[in-house]
Length: 120
Image (cartoon, rainbow, N blue to C red; front, side):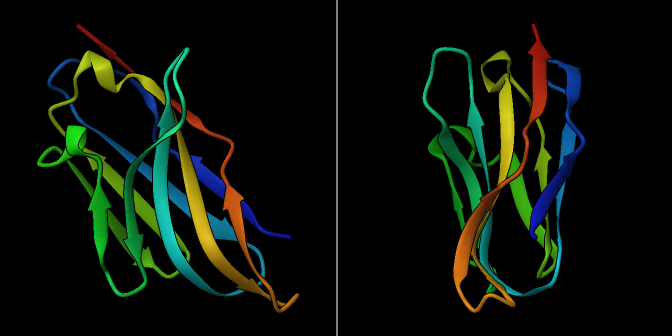
């Protein structure tokens, strides 16, 4: 079975930085794209950033120039968050899409979520 293990959330003051990490565990042969989503209280989950195996990245307009997504390996991704603002406060979820396992199918998986709180 595939699990996404996240780490790095926490409390930081406005203007500070945090780094989120996510590693996929299990027998995995490939992952098409990995990304980070966030959900603030009372709001819908939204894409923050994603990166394909070829290194193509997508960012939400609200985080461009402040956040940077990277992949250490085909099974792990990091999100460097700089110049954090109170409006970045949310639960951040790691996502892996097109995960190729022994089942032969390509599925989508979510992490359990990690809280990021930015104080003003």
